[in-house]
Image (cartoon, rainbow, N blue to C red):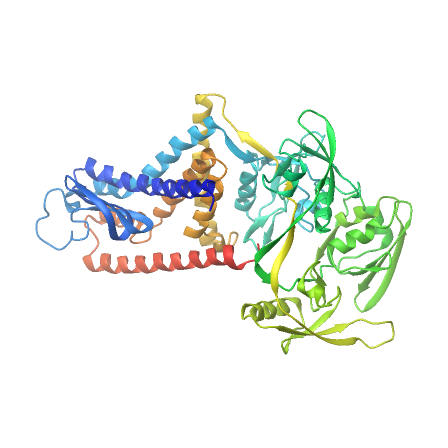
Length: 617
């Protein structure tokens, strides 16, 4: 680990520790203010690592860094009968105990109210609410929003950055969302879209990905091939030499990198001068293993009638549900091969597309009055269901073993595979055991001849990918207040918004199916996100810590026994009925609360493991 990463880790540990300290300090100060004697102030749980005693209080650092606690005298023994000693919890009135148990939550909110204005005064790195090409098949794609569109408002709420945009749409749920937008070089307008639930992500979306830098600024890895070729972060991409100009620059760059060959770029420097550079990729081997096959993604899920190729779609007669077999007579297997096939036909030429519609094979032809590659933007492709035909990755073990695009894998180590999900699960299971794979493969032959049956053996190998060390930068911005007054106003407004947003997220998770509980994160997610924000500078880290503090406040207010919210609930009951709940009821409730909290910790830890270590990234 390099020194910069070590510093980030230290910042994360201290930052999360600070949030925990603030929460426990709230309980500590409330207890002292009410006249109670604090026996223990602990950061962490379990065995004490080290500590010191000052007055009546033992201050300690404990072994398990998953929170902390404050123990007031008599806190776990009030209700045992007899006259309570002075300074114990039982001697405090209901309002005083209410203040004690809510002290941590109050301090968490105060922390955000202090930190967020300072962050806004210093300047917060953020992503502009500017979108890339909308996700095919999603509402924004159907509405024809182009890449570079800026989202100004969602339901009359001003959108300040891209994360705010995602949250606003997700919290809107299934209701129609009215967006105030500004397309490139046009005046602002309002449109209404109906969000769609994303099963993979577990919340409602419009299909609005983050956009790239409007001025095509590059991000260059300091030690990468692009830097060695002379590129800098001040350069702006003008063209990817040799790539079709009908593609957006982002698509040109991606297509060039997919080719794994040297890449020629034309860039503009900070001084306005242009130059051409050649970037030689560095092949790098990743840790995980694969055989290098993918699902066919040539089935048309939806067609857009508002795009630039709408006329060509109509003349061809393409329909949703068609499976694209060939373009310009060349077999295709997915997005990249369909794109490359369309690029072989020029505007003004006849385009032929072969599709399978039901059980019938059709060749559709039409005059392409526009560059045919624009057709791809109006088609939403999905994985072909009910088939085990595959596409092969370049440079993979599957390609080296002689497997071809379009081959149909019938079995893996004797286990039948009649669809992509079953095949993927079987291969992953066999690869995890370290076994050699024996694939039974069917391959198409000449028309009228039976399919060729092959048996191919291969081993999974570490993934080798080309590293060019350059990419288009995101649409970054700095949110900075003009003066202390505006910083306080913006910080207070952000605190209020995050309090409401966190509460609404929990409400939708617990009482509706509009946000999946799979979006909950535990200590692993907190650590990963903290490390990422720390690498972006202190303002970004403290911004995240303020949000974490607000999350901690809302979580602790939940009426679950053992949490602060559970204690507050019992105090409300005591205030109404004039006496505390019975010792038996309180004891059982603490056991139930402990089981609930432990179950929640197991669940979020499992989700973290799936999110960061199991799901493909």
